[in-house]
Length: 316
Image (cartoon, rainbow, N blue to C red; front, side, top):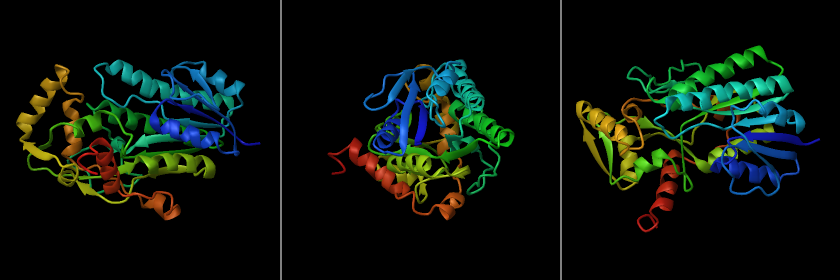
């Protein structure tokens, strides 16, 4: 029998690429997904219009004899509704884990984030998988990734019969990426905090899509930091994008960003500034030492490919 896989958050770009790969692979007997948005295509797989928090998830898993689940459902772009974000991110993840536990799913693949470590002034130069996941108290994506990270670790300890792979990945970037991060990159100027030029990592969207597909085929188990090769300073990112970097003192840029966020002029809260101020680089040797040939691109290539697609007249 082939793999029977269900993907939460199946209408996103990366999920769509993963579904296309799985549908065309005879090793996958059945492919399905849930989301609250219509996918780009339903050809060759089973789509269910379902919220990740809905208890009917267990019934879908059971009825379709799902043995493998990929958890991608999450609110990435910041909102002005923290209760909704917590409900979808945390309560939704709890529902996923309980549904998997109660239905006998044998393998779970979860995409976490290196933002789970948080951007803090006392962070080391790079953090391994054992470093505390402190998140960021005011950037909810980061805060919730840290909370759900612990939920998955506890689940792995309590349910050893269910194999789990959790990847902590940095910002995913590439030609098809569209979110509040690319909105920031699209501004006339890139803003920074005076006196700070943190190292940054990226994950090329092609690497991320390939990693998810490879993982379903090879079923690694454990917790891994993953990223495309290399580190870039924030100023290097601005230079590569052809943007002027305007650094403002912390006492000015945080209140200005707070005002822009409150007035809904900006698509991100001031807490995001800490992620272009303090380091949050993750060590990836644990994964690359075991699987050296899976990730092909560099962080710089991820930024370049995004820039070429976003501004083809400028980066032809």
